[in-house]
Amino acid sequence: MPRRSLDLGGFAGLGEDEARVKFEQQGPNEIPAQRKRGLLAIVLEVAREPMFIMLVAAGGVMWPLPR
Image: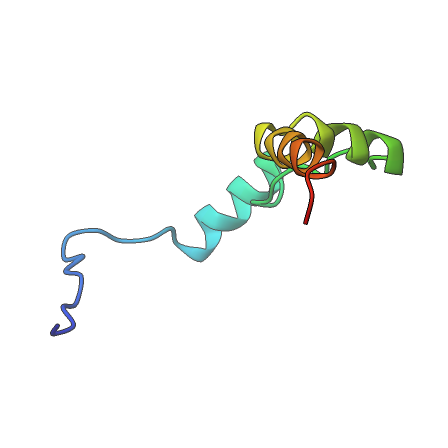
């Protein structure tokens, strides 16, 4: 598949001065850090996943069956 270039003619980015002003007003362009989660919170989050519940249920059904 041939690579096509993206034509951005007519669109200009921010100038250095405008970028500096926006940075000073709004801060850096990054996602705010989330609070640290403990091990128990992570375990509970995983345990509520439907796929995990299904795998545990399937294992519970298969466990007593003869091999």
